[in-house]
Length: 317
Image 1: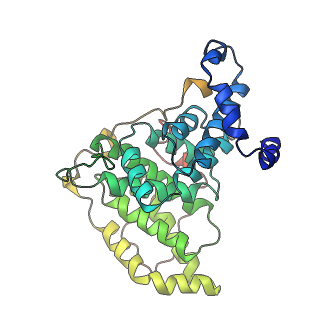
Image 2: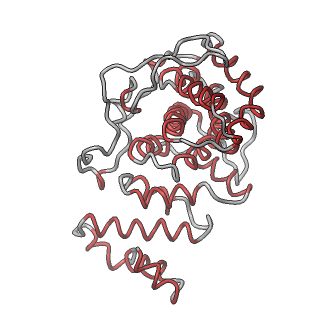
Image 3: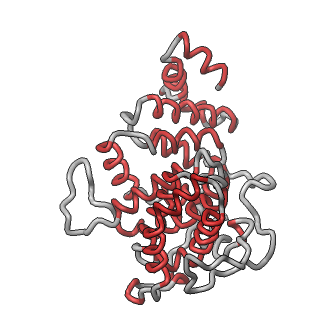
């Protein structure tokens, strides 16, 4: 790709020209015999073409490569960055279409497990938060050509993915800005308002990690951390009050009855994970959040060292 970027300085349409060659009708019969590296290069060209189009091309141009090659970090990074960028109208339309996509939640889970990258995960969180906000619109609202009515069955998959991504953001972030903290707070509140959302946040220990991060900010002598504590004190109190309420019995089925999936990995990328690819458990047990903690309570339990150590992740890995 470095060579391609160099050539593209002279011939800007190089990416599009190369992908057109890959996608040509005459190449269809040959593609079945191509090695995986060649197929991945074609997928990389396709996702870069979508990114260069500034969201004007069909979503399949980015969703297909991400689904089929979720282990390829560059494909996933370029794809998520392209999906998370756009005008307000583009993002509203994109959120509505992704809310209807039955596979995107599964792909997002795999991304969080395989690529816990600070450049990638916060953008994925922002994208999932927008999807959940769109998917939770009342069903009686009439759909429009640019905003089709979201499919409610996908709520469980997207909610679970957002909870996992929230945990990952809290796990990998070492320095907080007001923007990054607000994104996490928004994500927590959106998931909590979903059916079984509080149970998901409990199951993946998001609240425990959030409280630990808040404790760290409160104990920090950094001016930026102090500003975050001052600015978001009331918001944090509201989130704690929301999540410390008894779980909503009217939410429906218990976590055990929520639909589980296999992570949605495509056959085109079905080789076994390389050692250390998804984060594996360091111990068989993980700490559980203590109910009713307040802002002034400093957490005593250690945070889980890997997301895969949390219960319920075997079905994703």
